[in-house]
Amino acid sequence: MKPISNKIALITGGASGIGRSIALKMAARGSHVVLWDIDDKRLARVADEIADADGKAVVYQCDVADKQMVYSTADRVRKEVGKVDILINNAGIVTGKLFLDCPDEQLRRTMEVNILAHFWTVKAFLPDMIGENNGHIVTIASAGGIIGSARLADYSASKFAAFGFHEALRAEFKKERLNIHTTVVCPYFTNTGMFAGVKTRVSFLLPILDEEHVADRIVNAIARKKPRLIMPPFVYSTWLLRLFPVSVFDWVANLLGVNNAMDEFHGRKSS
Image (cartoon, rainbow, N blue to C red; front, top):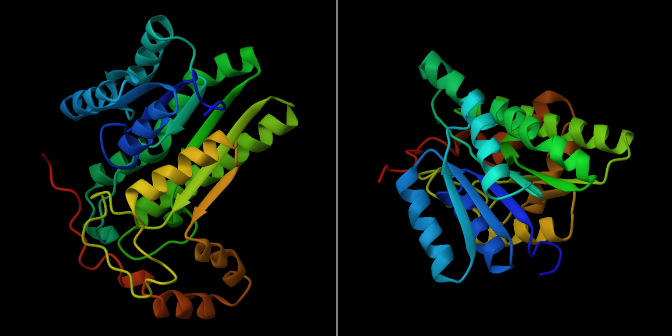
């Protein structure tokens, strides 16, 4: 518990899915959790869950795609809670459509939430971390940020960008000899509801992941300051497969059903 107890941990997209599960587990380990989400009703429910378990949580309604709202809400957090020790960029959306079926505004929204928001939150909280020469930035990316697949063009583009942004930040911190840790997380499809309807053909290699297990692994990775977490381990084979011709890479992806996984996708129902 010690590595994250009494730390202020800010989680974007904290009202549901993996963000909610991380929040509950971080609070159970003694972190002072700050939750951001656009859904204020769900935020309130998560705050109540944490309070019922004797945890500490403060919630802020914030659209992370809105740069000025991110900056102004970050100022409120500093004044009302304190300096953020652990920033977990978790907020994300998915359209799940063929590229030409995605309206322009949906494409823009995917990039704003899934990657541009990382720029704004890191710019908001990194100066304090540099001033303290201590901090931890966590990027919830995706296996879709390692391999692209059908019906995930905008999502994969945003998650490839998130992975690259995170890697570049890590390089900057090391070059400047800053004591700021980083963890990038790339899970396969997870049963949060966000990817409801997805299928996997080879479940023993690429299972649909359990939300609670994923959150446990993420919190443990943060506590251990593990720089990279990829789930399941078979996803690592993507980098090896890229050494082969593209035709071989595509054949293996099709054999594993990667490009058919989204065929029955319908996503999370609003509540």
